[in-house]
Image 1 (cartoon, one colour):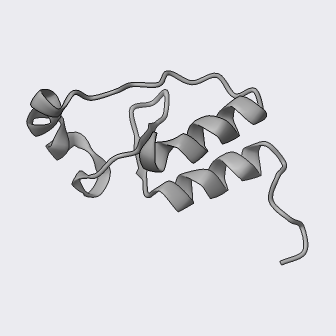
Image 2 (cartoon, rainbow, N blue to C red; image 1 turned 180 degrees about the vertical axis):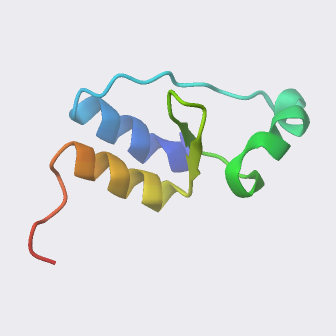
Length: 72
């Protein structure tokens, strides 16, 4: 749950395939340095680049799925 839940829902809604990776609390110390801004969630692309910040990721997924309004 938490901040990533809206991203899971969006990706499921637009039928975007994704791997949902959970990091155990004991393993977080090893992963923190590799995360954008040291936070989760992160969206990792096939080329290895990552995007952080929940709202930015949600906007990106919405754009891919045609969910963003055309008129601001």
